[in-house]
Image 1: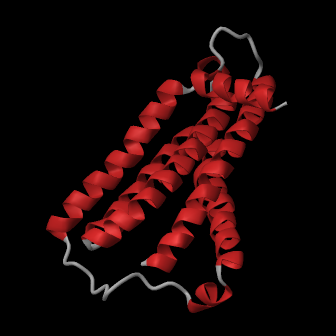
Image 2: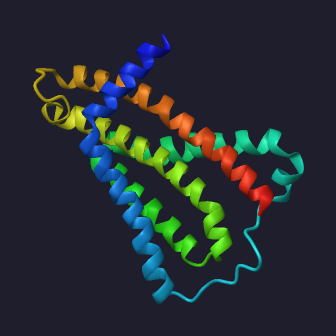
Length: 194
């Protein structure tokens, strides 16, 4: 069963390589450009020694913090903010992904070196989860808008294309869940260590 799942993942990702590369470049370039421009244009905010973490999360420990971060990132950030708007209009997923990258770049621009290095693994893992969520949203939106663009060489109706796109999204969301779960663990450990 796992072998079949991995084979389907590879087929889905291979079919979307160009989109995946484009959205990765869009996101991480947005982070870099925003951080670079922010460091010249804006006055650094007063951050103190570190980031403020809600005390109720830290007091409950890892048992609650990891699931809280994971569920927040998966449902609110990935699904509602990045994927779902793409279903309405395929371009919105990429626009919201770039916006998220720009916000992260702004926040990272003023982080001290040790905080930046501590946050970097989380940025990469969560960022890749959001890139995959944007791929899912773009494929969903294009499936009903232009099925011939999404499923080249296949003669499918809009309904069939949308159904196939939801199937792809299922496999993508399993991978997104893995990325965001690992990111939640890394983020929690980072917050405890910093």
